[in-house]
Amino acid sequence: MFSIQTSGSVLQTLLKNHHTFYLMPRSQQLPAVFKCFIFTTSYQRAKNPVDPKAGTAMWRSKGRDEGKEERRTGKDYSSSFNVFSAGASKKRAVLLAALSNGEQPVISSKKTTLSPPEKPLSAEEWGKLMEEFQGIKQFEEFMFAQMIAHNSPIDVAKSLLAAVAQRDGDIGYNLLVKYLVLCVSQKQTKEIYDVHDILKARFKTLETSASSLLIKGLSDSQRWRDALVLLEEIKKFIIPSKGNYGDCIKAALANREINTACMLFHEMLAKNVTPNLDVLQFFFDTGKCVNDTDFKNELIYILNYLRNNQVYPGEALMESIKHWFESIPGEKWKGNLTTVKNSGKCPSCEQFLESINLTEEEYDILKEKIIKDVIHGTDTFRKTTPQELEVFQRFVNQRPPFDIVIDGLNVARVCHKNNPSQTLLDVVNHLVQQNLRLLVLGRKHMLNGSRQWNRNNMVAMQKKADFFFTDNVSEDDPFLLYATLHSGSHCKFVTRDLLRDHKACLSDSLTRRLFFKWQRGHQMVLSDYISGKKIKFEPVLNYDTIVQTTGNTWHIPYDDSNLERSSYESMRLRP
Image: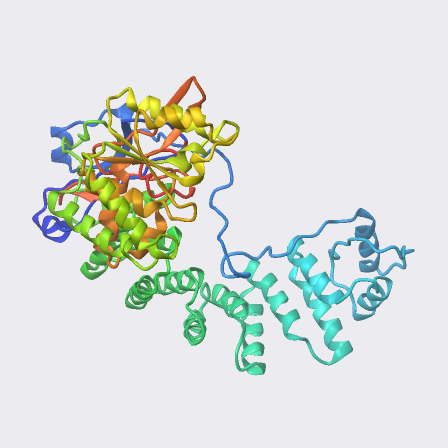
């Protein structure tokens, strides 16, 4: 985590409504402690010297694959070009090399996988190759797939196009798009221009994949404005992807069209399109070269976007944010790594981080919204009847407040090798030993007696905790949320469920932010369980772990990889 501090009154006015931000790596287990990066002025450094041991880079890449593959409904060429896979055959490589050298090799008629030639072939040579591999349907498209997979020289691809054009008098749409994939992946700008002009001249509209490819290729060229035109065309049919927006935003920033970039950024957020972290990094990298108050405000807006949406930057973005702060003219920011322990006090600036607890007013707002939008919302009654929910509310209201509410089925399935009823019994016994009042939510089938739901285990648990059994088709989460919120701000809940669907039901961004803050401070996650030997929960910290500022100090946590966090994992590691 890093934080920043300055004594300038201009910054205090500018940043007074904004917050700092930190991220925690998964590669270290740091219960009740977190690392941060601290920015201070020379005055503050003299007042609160930073331990040099804490100022070293503590998180390193593990060398594993960074970034999680995007979930797509179809091929999205805006961010990936290796869209085909194929094997290689030494025998066919020899064959193609012979053709390239003008030789006439002996070719087996047995169908096999082949690699593309290393050098361009003539139309006659391509024709001979096609004849020998008549068993391969759509030979040209197959060969282009191999060229993409092998990243073949562009001249080889051109020679195949020339052979097709000589034979057919034309080149089809699919071949042009596959050729474009190769051109964009190799940043063959002139060829991208040519394909763009050909496609626009011959076709009134383009498929999204072709438009995305062109946007990707053109955005990094002198004709980057053509990418903006293509983006507008995509908008007529669908919402552009985050790759489409990101390419255009980076192009505008690179060409100092700051207003265009900011307009596109706000547009994509308004359409609920989440920007990639590299786009945000481009904003801060540009900020080092642009001395403009409005753009500075825009970067502060981005920091608030990170805060309000629980977005944690990777190490590269954190470094860009750091360098931007330190480059602001006339403002002496300085960034340092530091460690904050469970007290929540930063040893570098001696200020406390925000409490994880909601204020009484915030808690009342959240409780009212959850009951209205989630518990009594239309989605709830698709699987839960109003009568069942009313019975449950009377059940909860007639009992003293609970300390912990447990999602019984969710917890019971934490260890697939263990008997579910035994797992749940172990967790109940562990929590009861701490003199806590427990409510366990289950399903009626758990009472039928079976190998998984041992009657003796179920009877033993019901002597130690309150149980409420819903219908087998009912949704557990509304019951979990109601019981926890009704019991008061001290009450926590146990589940590994992310609760993302319920955030989507909330009607405004303020409530969504409060919900996730409440979740971070109240959700207990069983991270380590060995039957009869070990039960361990992820620690719930007493301070919040998102971007936050006091006006002249920023604390920014970050990840050293792009692994996705769960909503309850603001700074904790995955179990």
